[in-house]
Length: 383
Length: 135
Image (cartoon, rainbow over all chains, first blue to last red; front, top):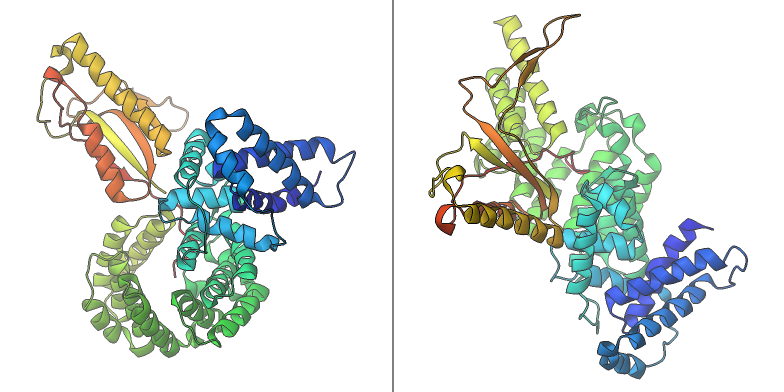
């Protein structure tokens, strides 16, 4: 039995049932039944059209379940009135699932869980492991999400931006357990791109590929963080970089700039530099200016200040930083870095230690603590 | 998608508003309190926000390495110990605001006279693995 084939077919089958008017939760139950049936029947009697086979069996199961439930009679009538399924391309059905799973009525964590389950075809156990929560917790999260969207019917596609936000959340979770969520997010975004002609979908895919390309170099074997400037560029995945850059260039050529394209442009400029010293910081500052115009996000302004520090010197960077709210995440770490470059290790050491206390993740905290320790050791030696 | 630890203290937290030691409550008041905690955890399981909850005994030992080939040194609770942890609950929620909201609800568990204890709970975010994107 080809498990990968079943997994790749599942979202499409689910999508057909949802398009025909099946309740989301009931549709998923029916699809699970059909998958079990496939595992039983296919080895001896493989179907010519696996997806068509699954749709037929799942739809029959759905109707059986619906009919056996008298309270659902009314909905059954509605389903029967649905026009017969037309020759709509399979990819449009899956697209519906993307929008359903990113519905604004869902909280971010519910939207992410439902997307991985319904569009990604992952098991609840796999998703629970990836998020380090008990399987029962993830099962409840998913079934609540299904209930929330059970009444939603689709007349037209929703907001692409919402779908992209959910996919980016998945990507940023990185990986743990037996599922690589970054790779999964890339796979789903690729699939979305084949269905939606939107430059921001391409922008997000390019961004993910460019970040993903550097992953092997971002951590040392002991798990500690390696900053961009110190990364072994030989370990970057050049084919992923080339693909990301090509996708980005095609998107930019359409002249409908968005947040993800601009972020990808920054990532591309980093990926493009043969050494950290040869990074085109002037152009990176320009892209951050575009991003600030598009989003007005304080995090963007913080990154811009660091880039200004590289392009025009640490004093200019500190001046840019001085205009921002000191309570911003990583504000203290950025200030520490710029003070060190400005030749003030005592201030930098103090700020690094302070930034370490504020860090929200382990690798970053350890990294900042080491920076403070390194400068303190140097100050002891010289003073 | 962010985990928080809700810490209950036997000792060490600021005094709650309804400050009557549990052994002075009526049995019904204790039952009501226990039931509240139970229902709270059950509700979080249903909402998909529950990770773990454990109660701890008040008495603990301190243990220390005492050199190569020697058994570890143990000691009872130090007299000057200010802080005793009663138990914890771990939740996985969408935002810090939601974590504060839930901690507030938990702090309203009924105590003496059936009125909320207004107990202080310590809320601590977990340090996470680094996100894929940082630089």
